Length: 522
Image (cartoon, rainbow, N blue to C red; front, side, top):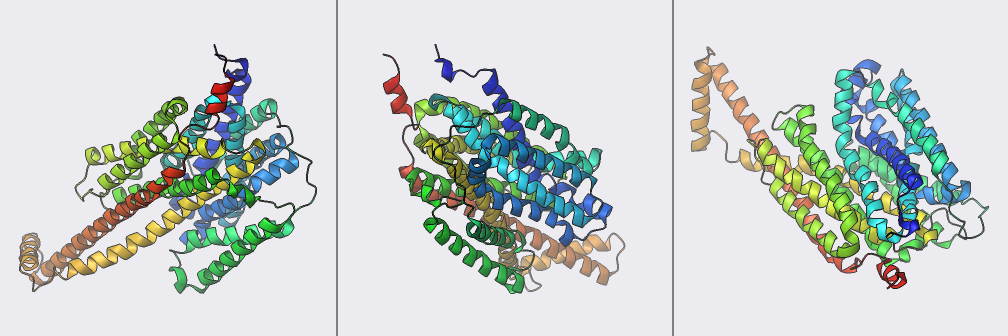
């Protein structure tokens, strides 16, 4: 029979429900607007560059506030801070839905990001403290369902709402759900006992350097590709500000008496390794989710709805696998489970690198299923090994840093893969063009064959020749783009291969297992 403090009573269940509702709202809103951007442009009369800030502004404010959550929760009380953050997110969602101009929408998206950023790290700390040691896998599995599935569901849900209603409902649907989550959190959450005397000073220089360093870095990652990276003076200046701000922030936080972000927690090997693995998982998750719809829509000519549907099996697999891992991690341990997940992820990415221009549902289904399986296997052990190894007083700071690295990993992955696709497509197009010219016998035969086909449709010989050349050039471009996608998936696979040595530093047994077994009655 389970001890009373290890049972999932009604209060714990309500905490889990309310916290996960808030997490899902926040994470889905990171990507839900992607498919609605064209509708927003037409309705608000905005350019693509202006409407892009609807995404960029949210992510920048989100990333800036994540590392501050531990300090803000300690200063204002975690229950109050978490509940007010949900209300801020909900009010900003309402204002986004009512926005009548692009500038107004971008402003309220930034405010929404400030409220949403608090939900991610604080909720994970709440889950750590809500579940006892033996049930930490279950707690992190439940949190992981939102953290891993949210980015996959966002574009699909956004496309469905936009097609059937309007883009305004992408934000307005958050209002009743946000109010419900805020009410439940206010009713059920309790503040943990303070770990020490409350600090009264505010590290304003640390906050300023954090905003400059992380904010500029995220802006570079979000805007770099659109502005041709370091060919743009703006990107150069932002990169310099990000470097100086980040270095100044690290120096300030390591020497300040009361730092706003206590970087000293990274002296814990489990947290340092967990942050590295979290960044790697962010690259793998957001990178693979970014590549799939671009591949299916630009090369296979699928609709956005079809692209969303092909992700659904992997999302369901991730959710199921996380619950299974949450139950098994106490017996299996983080290291073995994480190693299995990384190997499955490598196999999934290698299979994705074999996709062709003729790939169909069957070819895409199984690699996506493997990706979902891998994400479920990896997230739970990394979260448990990272956060459960920390003293309770350091869990909020650790959760903030862990989520920051995962978020920055995702941003870096998308930025790097976007540039990689374009550069590798140019390289492969040049290489293919060397073998597709009028002097090449095979290409010459194809041009002649295509020319005859167009002539039979009534085109003049000159027009038929131009049409044949244009079609062959389009085929070369599509094939070059395909090989670039294959390269991108292989690079992601190589990242996980390089990450395998980190397994040595991951705990073999779930943290707290030995103590729990020693305390258990024999």
